[in-house]
Amino acid sequence: MKRVPSGILPLVSVDRNAGLALHRQIYDSFRAAILDGRLRPGQRIPSTRVLASEIGVSRFPVLSAYDQLLAEGYTESRVGAGTLVCASLPEQLMSARPQRTNPASVRSGPRRVADRCGLLPRRQAVPWVVPPGPFRVGQIAFDQFPHQIWLRLLARRGRAVSAETLHYGDLKGSPALRQAIANYLKVARSVRCDAEQVLVVNGSQQALEISARVLLNPGDRVWVENPSYRLARDVFTLNGCRMVPVPVDGEGLEVSAGIKACRAARAVFVTPSHQFPLGVTMSASRRLQLVDWAQNSGSWILEDDYDSEFRYESQPIASLQGLDPNSRVIYIGTFSKILFPSLRLGYLVVPPDLIERFHVMRRLMDLGMPTLSQQVLADFIDAGHYARHIRRMRVHYGENRRLLAESLDRILGGKLQLIGDEAGMHLTVMLPKGYNDEEISHRAVREGLSLWPLSRLYMKNPRQGFILGFGGVAAKEIPAAVRKLHNLLSRTEGRRAQA
Ligand SMILES: Cc1ncc(COP(=O)(O)O)c(C=O)c1O
Image (cartoon, rainbow, N blue to C red):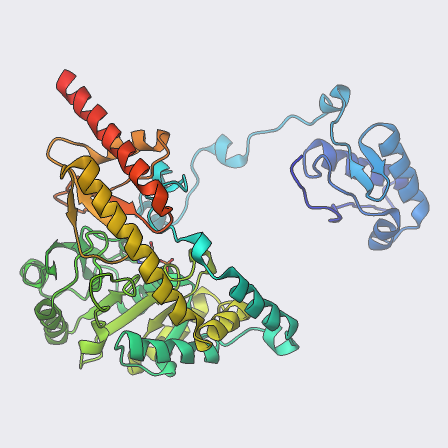
């Protein structure tokens, strides 16, 4: 049986002036709660002593009501567990259930909500994100995470909680973590910053939302890479911005095409270290061109540096922020790739003159991140575990990527064109002409494969292909998964030949 919360006090109302005996009122309240499902089968109900004290009556009416519920089969008592709602209610009791009336929204049709709700497409369940099988994008190698170390640090901090650590934490992020992030970014990513400029947030997504609220007005135009990260686009849409898709080639964002399309754009969203999803690295000359454009047109650069630590053919490429002498870059980073996404910790590095505005905006969105996880993460970084974990994962993911590229080549014989650099946790492949990636992705789910269709990430001129995550797949499963992909494509070819 599914576990249900127990010992929670249901709303039992007693009114001494109601002209109805107290035990009857208590009985009625429980009966109604059981029949309409508020109290679920197997759920423990409070002891007579607790309930009597909570509702301010003596134990006698409560005992009497409980006896009656027991006698009629609504509850049962179990040694050691107290009184529980009966696991299976008899038929005749079920027929006493009140008829469910339609909720108000169904009776009256769609109800009025803010216009901005209409700006975003309705949430569609995309099947390829659900199975944790081969090629799910963003999946980390769970079994490689140093759980024991993490748990030890967590236990140590957990034992040392105080009134202060349980109170609201620093809205900007815990000072120790901000310092640890600044130290890391300066050395490993050539970011120009001190801890004051670092703001700890709930992942890149929140970083983007805060940035858009601080920097952009409705109607402002924003360059976005075409193709690009969907959730970033949703932020701009919701903030009323107009997006200008800018093509990406082997050197990253085509800055001159952006200038031609809209020189006066207020901002650009870029993933220069490892373009999402195509995987290319922005060249030095494009970086300088972008920084120049931002300075000349008074625009902001939102740099999403989501997985730059993982490069397998060379050293990680320095951040764009570190190249910019004009403080026009808002640098965004996340722990979702290196550690794990449910940690929900990321950060922003903000130019000094904007720090105050970012803090004010952030306070409206939430009151800071949980202190305990920030402390544990700061300890993890300061003790050198973070750097060690990155080094280990670079080897692990690098091997997965090599094996995936080799299997694609050997099994598919060059049918799919691999693009992008040897980096990150995903590899993007282009389909030959005539294939429909989304159609294949739907069929792949039935085979246990998660193939993210590339065409979905374009705003215009979509190309067909797949984004293949290799982070969460075991090396020994890769060739078999590629064979499945091969079979899927062969069947698609067969169908096309018959049509
Ligand atoms: C381009 C890009 N940026 C950022 C993220 C991470 O977002 P978050 O930090 O909100 O988990 C992802 C996750 O898949 C991503 O693909």
